[in-house]
Image (cartoon, rainbow, N blue to C red; front, top):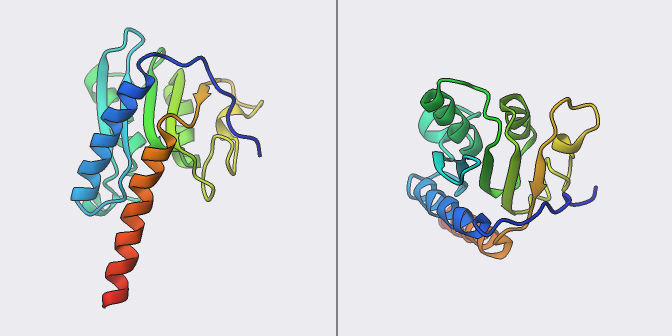
Length: 165
């Protein structure tokens, strides 16, 4: 599969990705895989935040993107989120991509590519499938090195800890 087509970059993409990275740190501090997400309105206002919480919530769907979408839906009292941009530190999986389609998110910007389960072109191309009624603009690789290193360092520490047992 080909990587997602690059959308027009926004001056704010890196700023919001840094915000998402701080949320990923929160996930890691809670023993979760460090992925963070923020949802921003068309006027560049923060709507909601999310970070990975499947362990804490005993919920396999509690990915950072889903948590941000749920919080936005509650805040706006609407599950439809047109005109929004979702920033996430890791390429979304199929589940999260599907949720973005249902929510009618307009744009997704992600950091690190996910060669194992990425659903925006790395493995699957869920968001750009011609069968979708809703189309999202995708921009990948924003602060990819930093986002990828955050995840790699987490898993290196995890492997090191499990080898000590």
